Image (cartoon, rainbow, N blue to C red; front, side, top):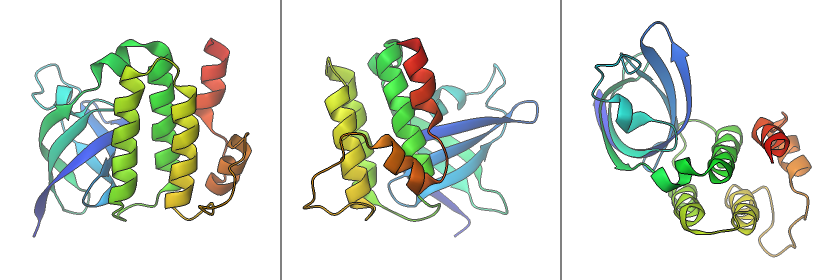
Length: 178
C-alpha cells in the first residue's frame, strides 16, 4: 500500500525549499516519521493550519522515496498551551525529548498516549514542573532506560543528555527567558 492515514502530533518542522516544510510527526500507528509537506508555507495552503508545531492531526501520507503529506485534518491544536509562553516552552521541551529519544518508524502507542495526556495536562495545570518531571520519568521507563521500581533522579537532564548523546537546547533557552 503506497498511501496511508495516521494520527500524529507534529513535534518538529524545518523549512525546505521555497514553499515546503519537512515535518517530524510522532504517530500512534507508525511511531516517529518524517514527511515533506509541499506548499504548506504558501499563504494559500489549506493544509498549513493543520500541521503546525504541537498540533494533533490525522494526516494522509503518500509513501514514496520521501513520504509526502497529501492531506491533514487537525484534531487538537492545543491553543491554550500555545498562548502561554512558559507552557509552550515546556511543550517544545517534550517535543525535543521525543525527537531525541525515539527511533524512526517504531510504533509505541504508550509513548503516544503519554505525550497526548501530558499536553492536555499542560493546558489546564498552573504549575507545569511536576507534570514535566513525571513525563521525563515515564518516557524513560517506557523506553527501557530506567527501571520501574527504582527512585528517579532529581536532576534528570544530564542523564537524558547522555542517552540522547547531545545537549538539550530547549531547556537552556527556556531558562534564559524565565
